[in-house]
Length: 146
Image (cartoon, rainbow, N blue to C red):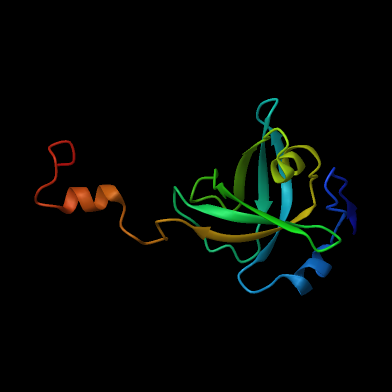
């Protein structure tokens, strides 16, 4: 099912899931919008189904890439807003005046649209010790950690 996405920048028609899967380079995966939640007048939570999602930890982010019909691409990084135990990935995006990606994600994006996603990435990976783990396991940990 092709979805038409119209934006002041020529993002053009959204690819179908099958079309997108055949052109996503290694490291990028296709996420499908399963729910949109209007958080404020300028912010929207985007809930995504991500096949093969291995999970994330608090503080990690993902890169979102949009590709226009003419091949122009724009990428932005967003913090993951969903709980680590969630099977879905949620991103909260605030619309930035004249922002080409945030304006699209907060205004034009619809349920069932496909997005290219890479990650999670950040200073931590699943299984890596947290700052609290390091602090509390240290002999010199401050009293607040003990």
